[in-house]
Length: 486
Image (cartoon, rainbow, N blue to C red; front, side):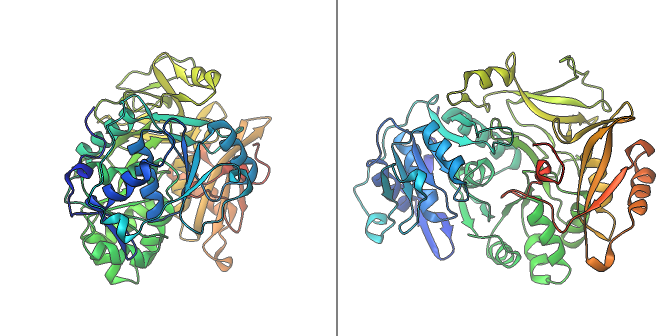
């Protein structure tokens, strides 16, 4: 395998990372990160207290240079979850920005502060360590743990490098690009794709620290060419475009707008395209697989799809019996399975879970999908929470949610299934009204779905909430809705 970060070896003065008014060139990043890497324990994983900061990015690069697995830690983790992660991954040290207060479960782990001093950045005699083996673990990223303790997903250096190169090809990502985003730095989207992606290409990252529409406008107007976000962010951008011509101009000038981590509602697709002339690109990935598919810039995939497989990634759809669906079948919903160099190595300390996750060499994603005639994947939802079996039909929650969100009085929508003696499952819609004075009538929403989709997709119940439960990435946590099974 080639060098993971070729640009670090060139002593380039080109900007690599910028967080607010703090920045490091590739030469400075190499100097600071190599110095920190030399202080790390040679074999044990290193935990990184992953605040949205320059220190986090430097700490992760240092761990990768040292050849030790990096364990990104969500600063919002609860103590029991954090205690499990520490016990399971057994880090030899924890890296944190100076002054960060670490919770008790990390108290027994030796701490190293990530110091980014002017002196260290200008060090002239730095030496980068030898490149580790391509099969060595690069990351141990913990899943959300919705059905038990979080599992540690082991990702190899080869998986990271091959996936970033496939994205580079799909997105025509070059060293001239400047990526802006305000995503958290403890997961695949914000950290591996959003920080290591630019570094792999020799490009630049501008991190917002915290997402705001004003911050996006400033960074994109100031030379940003690419923007990463999640649907909640793009929803807010679409809202702001109606009254912020500077934001409209900034987004209109982007080379690429990318949305991920959850489906972007069609209503927001349409609003952003109408305001800016830009089409938001969607892609599909998981912690265990990194990125699998993407819409191509300038391609013909319709909004609502997540594109075609990336280079070297194979996908297939299988029915309930595990039989592969024919490639020309564009109607039948099946479980999406993946294979390729992007796949994780194992669940740490969980050989049982690792074996259960695979069907031969294919990873069972648990995501349900169909494929369009051009091969584009159209996600229906999670097998466990988004596929509703009602009256003999399989119904995807996502298509119903898109219709509900098209109603002007609906701000947020989620659809679930609940046990029903007659139907097997009945469809339930959870609605956050646009305003307390604009609460739509339940029958009005149910009729809208029946008219636009089919009568059997009509919600049998409509329930109103002040807000939907969401995680840090903006995904709706359907298991936390009242009365749902965890």
